[in-house]
Length: 311
Image (cartoon, rainbow, N blue to C red; front, side):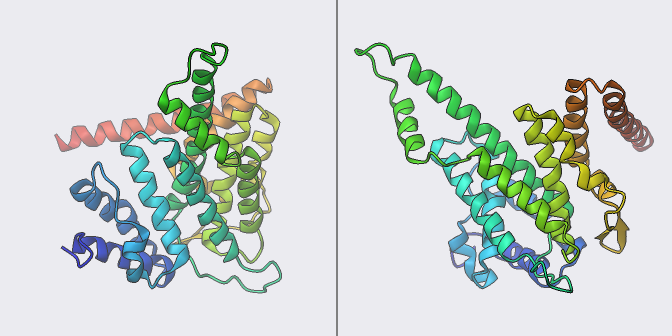
C-alpha cells in the first residue's frame, strides 16, 4: 500500500497518466493508461467506491491544476456510473465540469499566436468521453429536477401535507444552486470549445475537443427541439476547407476523426438522423441512418466471423 493508504499502482497510474498528458504526449502510452490500467485498477480496488481524492494524489503531478481537474472528472464519471447520484453529487458534477473547462480554455493558445503551443494532450477517446458525459449529466440533472418538482407539487395544495424529507432536502439544495446546469452556460462552453479549437493555431487536443463538442452540441440542440441548429452544429466537421487533424503519425479530416471513435460516430448519426426526420428531409435522414446501420452490420459480421475462427 502507498503512503497515503491506497495501492502503489494508483500512484504509478497518476504519475504515468500525468506524464502522457503533460510531458511526453505519446498517444499509445496514454491509451494504455486511460483504456487499460484505469479500468484494471478500478475493477480490483474501487469497483463500487470512489477513487482517492485529487488532494490525496496531488503530489504525484506536482499540484498540476488542469491535470487534477481531469483526474476529478475521470474519477467522478466512474463513481456516478456505479451509484445513483444524489442532488449534491449532481451539483458537484456541475462544478467539476466548469472548473475543467475553465482551465482548458485558460490554457488555449492566444488567437494571435503564430504557432500552436502544446501543453496538453488527450487522446480522441478521452476527449469524446468528457464531452459525452458532460451532456449526459446535464440531461440527468434536468430529469432529476423535474421529478423533484413533480413530487413536491403533489403536496403543494394540501396544507396538512409536506413533501417527503428527501424531496424537501433536494428542493433546498436546488434553490441554493439555481445556476447549476443552466442550459445557457452549457451552450456557452460547447460553443466556446468549438470556437477555440477551430482556430488555425489550435493544437491537436483542442481540435479534438472542438469537433467532439460540435457532436455534443448537435445532440443538445436535438434534445432541445431546435433541429436546424442541431444540423448546423455539424458544419465544422463537414467543412471541405477544414484543416486536417494529427492523430499520431496520421493526418485525418474532422469527419475521419469523429468516425474513428465509434460512440461519437453513433451519436452524430443518431441525432443528425432524428433532426433530418423532424425537418422532413427524409433522403438525408435515410443516408445518415442507413450509413451507420451498414457500418454496424459490417462490424457484427466481422465479429461473428472472428468468433467462428477462434472456436
